[in-house]
Amino acid sequence: MHIINRRILRGVAAGLLLALPLVLIAHEYDPENAEEINEVCAGCHDEYGQGGKQGKYPRIAGLPQGYLKRQLLLFQDRERPNMPMVEHVEKRELPLSDIEDISIWLSRIQLKTKLPPVDETAPGFDAYARLQEAKKLMQVPRSEGDTKHGEKLYHRECRSCHGAKGMGNARKEVPMLAGQYTQYLWRQVKRFLKGERIHDPDEPDDELLKDFTHDELRDIFAWLSVQDD
Image (cartoon, rainbow, N blue to C red; front, side, top):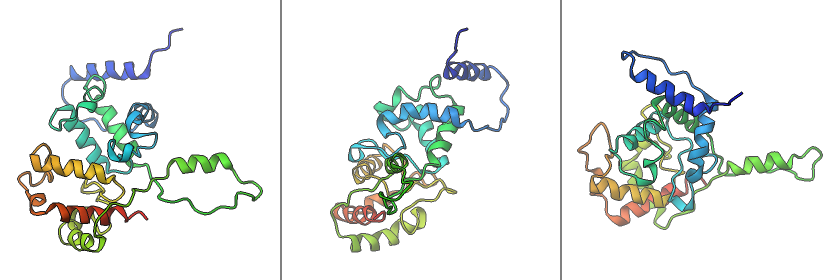
């Protein structure tokens, strides 16, 4: 008996759907499919979406589902240029149903910033469970800058969208800034300033970031980097 890869079957099904009349179909979340897709994502973004290499690969765990879906579609349509993502977002490789599944999967991952204290000598201590828990641990390194000044700037200009602690807004599909690698944040600001990315989809001509100096952004990022301490 031949075993047919589930991803191949899903790709065939997606191709057949393209030939059908356009109708609204409610998406049925498939966590097993999402876990399989995540195995590909993990090659850069790690097993639990933590990212790595100090922000070369950003954290994607815990970002709003709608935000993740929108970014994947932007990558797919080449509206957000990113060469490493190209081979992974082709429509035949990643149909809309897969985008829905992986977006839900990643949005539900909760990464701890510290482990609760335990007595490792206590009877019944589970070392393996502790190790697995540690794998979901992530804390952004403290970034250089004046955190007090950064806090004032953040609350004046960024809080209304990204929240009091920089944790974003899932309902409005606004991403977290706290808990994200500072190197990645710098890289995205440069792309916003160059027009390679749109800062606010509701106001595509928004030029807020151009009002900040380099030192002001440094201080904001410094404050964000300590919010997970």
